[in-house]
Structure formats: C-alpha cells, structure tokens
Length: 192
Ligand code: AMP
Image (cartoon, rainbow, N blue to C red; front, side, top):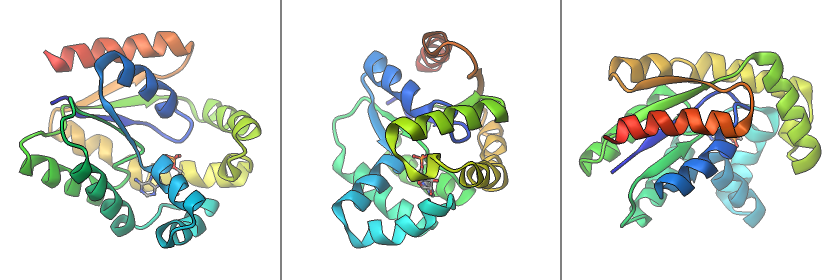
C-alpha cells in the first residue's frame, strides 16, 4: 500500500495537489478538513463541537479528529492507499495514525511537505475565501492564527517523520502543474 501524508501550512495547496495524486496513483483521499465541514453541513453533534474551533482557526481536539479517522479507515477496504490531507496535525495524531497503520502492516510510505512562503499563503487563502465562502479564509487575523497554530503544533511533525526517514520537502511555489510534477516524481520514487 502507498500511504502518503500530504503536508504543509494552510494554503500550501494540499487539497489541489491531492486531486492530482489521487488520479495518478489511484489513492483514496482523506481530508479531515473536508470531513469536518461535512459534519457541520449535516448538523451533527461532532460538527457543532468542531465548528467553534474551526471558526477561530484553532485545531479541533485530537480525540474528535482521531475518532473520525478511525471510522474512515475501518470503512475503507480494498484501497491501494491513502492521501492524508490536513492530518496528522499534531504529534499525538501522528502517533495514533502510526499505531493504526502498523496494526494492518501498512505504514506511512512518506510525508511530502509543500513549502510555501508566508506572504504567498495569506494571498492564496484570501483569494480562496472570496470564491469558496469559507469563513476561516476570509479574515486575515484568522488566517494568521491558523499559520501560528501550524508553526506551534503541526510544524514539529517534520522532525517526527524525518526521524523515520520519511520526510520529503517539495517546492510548493509556482505553477500548479509544475508542483504536481514535482510531487509525482517523489511519489514514484517512494513507490519503488
Ligand atoms: P483544512 O481544511 O485542512 O484547512 O482544515 C480547516 C480547519 O479544520 C482547521 O483550521 C482546523 O480547525 C480543523 N482541522 C482540520 N484537520 C484537523 C486536524 N487533523 N486536527 C485538528 N483540527 C483539524
């Protein structure tokens, strides 16, 4: 199985690039942000709980996100692998994910980090906010909070995966198709 963590700060292009990788390598997409937004749209208890955190640009508690991922993994048989997008976001989440995948002997193959400058992230998110209507993409202060939360709680995962020799840094600036090509080259290398 090919299990990829697509990593990077908010606005790095994870969702966009996940679409290319799914198509090229036939993988399942698992985006915790998308899953949480579906829960909110469906008005579930989990969605109501998550919404307060998401609106402020804070992380949803590990227990909530981990429970959601466990359910999804249990329901997804017969897959070539997963693209994890926006998950894990804390070292605790990464440890739980490793345990879950190791139980099935299908560990993470690699973590691909899309590297993008802060000013570019803010520009991308503000313009996405105008199109998508996502409220957390519409305010510069919420965006800056999300980037700060990323730096504090999520960035340490680079070291976590480096220690396992699974870290790959990818230039996430420039033309979308060229970034996709850079990712594809790395995934092909990992897949061999
Ligand atoms: P995203 O769509 O990945 O940008 O996520 C949007 C928001 O959902 C984040 O700002 C968090 O509030 C929440 N979220 C998504 N994934 C996670 C996660 N793995 N852990 C905690 N919160 C998350």
